[in-house]
Image 1: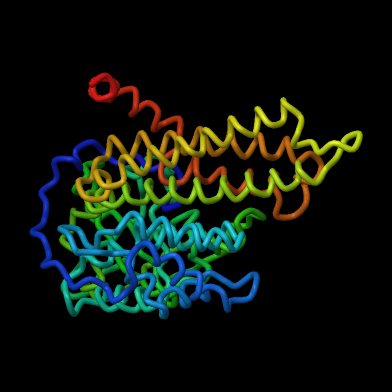
Image 2: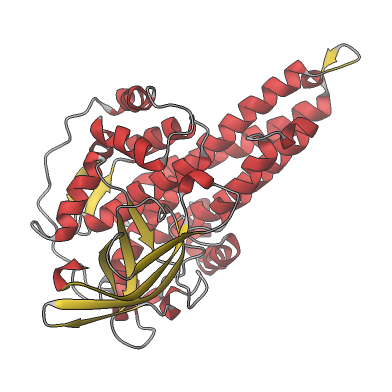
Length: 400
C-alpha cells in the first residue's frame, strides 16, 4: 500500500484543522446499489493483463473514480464506503492483485490528498486529470533513509527559495511509480521529527532529476512498484501541496480510509479464493467421493468463511466512523484484523488446494502477494501494540 508500516506521530491528532471546503455536487452516477455494475461495464472491454494506467483510465472515463467521493471535507474528498468497496471488488474480480493495489492506493490516499489543493494549483489540475483517468499518481512515502514504520525519520528533503523548490532524496516501494504520470512525495522541509516538519510535493514523473527503477520483485507485477531517486529536482514552489507542515497531518487524515479500503479488498480477495478453493474441493475425488464431503475439509473451510464474514461485519460496523470522523482507533483495529485474518484464510486455502495451489495465479501465489495487506499501510505487529494501548475504551464499548 502507501508504505511499509507507517507510524504517524501521536501529535497529528492535535494538529490544527483547515476550514472545510464547500461541498461539491454529487457525481452523476447511479445509486450505490448499481454502482458495481457501472464499474464492471467499464472494465469488461479491457483485455486480460491490462496495465494499471489502462484500468485506471477505463474507470475514470466511466465516471467511476469521481463517483466514489460523495462530498468534499476539510482535507479533500470523502469516499462513500459502499461505492469504494464496490469499485475494489469489481477490480479484484479481474484477478490482478497488483493492479487492484494500485487502484486502492490512489483512490484511498493519493487522489484525496491532491483533492485538498486550492483551485487553480498544479495539484488541483492533476486531481481533475486523475479523476478522469487521464493520469496516475504514485504515493511516495516510504523513504530510502528510514524503515517504512519510521516516517518521521525520512531523509527526503525539500527546500523553498523564492518561487522555486528543490527536492532531494529517495523513496522505496512506491506503488505505481514505474508507470505514473505524477509522484506525490512526502518530504522534510525542516529538521526534526516533529509532525509539523513534513510536507507533500507534487512531482511530474518526467521532471529532470527524477529516476524511477522497478522494485525488482516477482510479486504484484501489475502494481508497477518502483524505487525513486530525486537528484536536486527543481520545480515551481506552487508544487507544494497545502501549507508547509501539514504533510503528516493530512496523511493521517486519509490513512484510515486506506485501511478501510484494505479491509474491503481483503474480503473481496479472500472470498474469491475461497470460491476457487470450494470448486477445487468439489472437483477432486478420493475413492469416488469429492473432497468437499470430507468433514475435516469442510470444517477448515467453514472456519475460513466465518473469519471472512466477521471481517466484513467489522468494516461495515466501523466504515462510517473511519471515513466521516477519522476514527483512527477503529482503523487500527480493522487493519490489525485484516493482517491476521487474510493470512490465515489464504494459508488454509493454499493447503486445501494441495499441489494445484502452486499453479500460476493460484492460492500459493495469491497468499504471497496478499502479504502486503499485513505490511503496507501499517505492519500488523506494530498496529497490535496500538490496539493494546486502546484496550480500555474498546473493552468498555464491547461490554456496553
